Image (cartoon, rainbow, N blue to C red):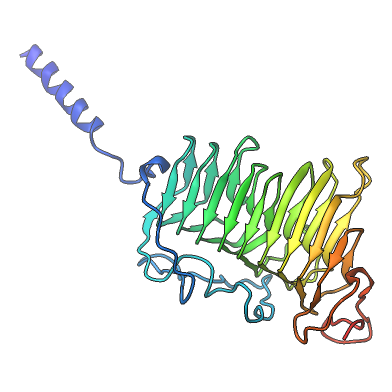
Length: 327
């Protein structure tokens, strides 16, 4: 009889070990799928039953600025493609190289500790720290056709120090949009509705060094809170070299493009090019600050060229944080 009891007890333990905890979050490596067909037009974020609707989550500290002009990324050309079915998932921690997260509605953010990871057609919400966070050793993270929502309290949309490329990403609801390290490429994305916090300032895209070979091309970056910048390059923690800011719509911030020697001994960022961008007039202090190459920049509303964005200052006597210089 004693032997029978031991056998029955062993069977119970074995059966329990085979039952997956329904509250446990599935491992990130489980989700792998082939590349989706590109559908750049007519996309809308997908709503999964039981989850909040996608889009800007209202907060008294979130201010919506004017929409991007035609031809630049907006909510209809970024984020999860229309018709995509998303599978609900909890927080993801990726530790294996080459993992693909595809078509997930992730509550709780993504932490990436491996290289060559792809996040594709995902909606990621996280009110804490960073919506997508990388280890500094991460290489070649790719985020595409996805929405990142900081829910009005997250500090950063994408950050952590590794190298990444983000394409057709709709990012909103965080204090800062992206924090760039070496090799960052930001393409065809929409950064907007940054969150005002009492002890923080807002940057759509920020690099504080060390960093090199950064490309920011054909994005819409809006900072309606009139604090700090649309794009901020500061040699605070190391040198910055080789930054291309090309063919973007940029609007808002204290200074829309802010290139600064932070006084930490690393000097002013070098080989910075600001070219072919279209600027909005909703800034607080100046359109630009610092030393960098400029060419082909113009106002978005009337196409008038801007020879030097660092000379365009706000007129304190005018309403609505509009520019007094230029056309």
